[in-house]
Image (tube, rainbow, N blue to C red):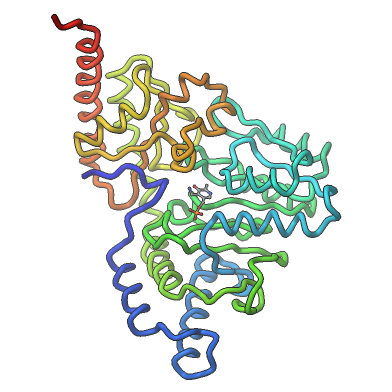
Length: 381
Ligand code: PMP
């Protein structure tokens, strides 16, 4: 099987699985316990915090381990809401935020959400951002760093600087950035979230870096009194190993965009009316969001599965709900077009050969889909 659904989750790296097994087998004591075994686990957790914080060039005290980016994003919005009397806080978020931002924002801020539109390439325009910032005077700005469906890179560095200059809290959902692109500059954000399973680490563990105090899950005062709950040491250790392995490789990954581009050229020659979302703007090296001219995306997914290629219909979260994601409306696609969106996303373990194999598989899949459609119109006597 050639796997092209890495923006939804990546395969855990072998060394990560080994480290998690060892952590579970040898260091299973409760890190809050005062005995030697417990304090050893505590020291290992703090070592992981220091190491990851060092890579991200932030202070270890700013990094809280969470169950992933959904929790991190929830914690930001609930913390900002808690700082203001009920219904008085207001926030500015982009129209293409992940549901862990957009739906949580709806819950806490309701009508006090101002939405930043995106253009047809799925990118926020800075002039519009500056206008809204001045007009709305929000308590928080949230902008995704790279969009999970399009791979389009948002101008978050510029937004971070403007917010810093104007002393506005800027939160960046960096879940698709961390582990795929150089993390320099993330420390300019007031806060940012990330998740280990997007870069070869385990699921259910991630982090939130914040220079502002955050209210997390209440409980037993773990993680320096910030987030309650016994720490998931095997998960944290797996994330540390994944991060160490990936961060040294990040600079070499971007050149792989030529593999993706060759795949897109091949497909564009094959399907003359193919649309590639965000083709003309900076995109993550691993992602392509296709709007195919024929057949619904689920037919493509199952046909390509049959040929040994795993792709996705877009965001895994919206697939589970069987409804178009907010992205398609935000970039002006019709309902019909949104049902023809297909996301292809590679990672560091995807060989060049698989991109061309996938391109060939599209050709074979389309022949079968056309032939099935023709045959389904024949009335057999
Ligand atoms: N934000 C973005 C941009 C994502 O892609 C995802 C995962 N699909 C999340 C947040 C949620 O991450 P997690 O699965 O760690 O909760």
